[in-house]
Every structure is written in structure tokens, then in C-alpha cells.
Length: 87
Image (cartoon, rainbow, N blue to C red):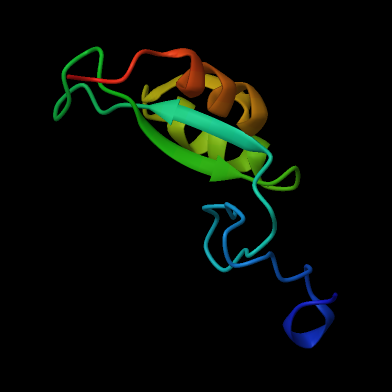
């Protein structure tokens, strides 16, 4: 199904979408980052990216020294499933 004005397909309501401004494409990548002025070294914030925006978003974070890792959404979710629950 095509999105508004013939753009990217609209994702399902529960499908993670790209974090790029205005993009509603399905996310394929997780960009893990932190701002060392605000976050402890082990803290990871995440942006999601589609194929089209992975490089742009990665470059944005890398230029600021924030980017820590880029992995597929599938690998990120599998790693989260493999970690023991807190508590």
C-alpha cells in the first residue's frame, strides 16, 4: 500500500518506523547512541532507520561523537530477548 502522495508505504500500526523527519517507512536499522555530556557511558538511546536514511542519520550522530553502534532491528530485538529481565 502506497503512503500519502504516493510516497513510502504506510507501515502497520505496530511496526517500528524510521526516525528520520517525515519518514514513515519500516525501520530496518537501530542506531544506538549517547550524548556523553548527558548520559552515563553505558546508556544507549536509539534511533530507528529505514534503508534510505541509515547513512544520513548515522553521519549526523557520528559527526557529534554520539554514535556507538548500528545493528539490524532484528539483531537488536534478538539481543534484547536474550538479556535477562531486570529485577
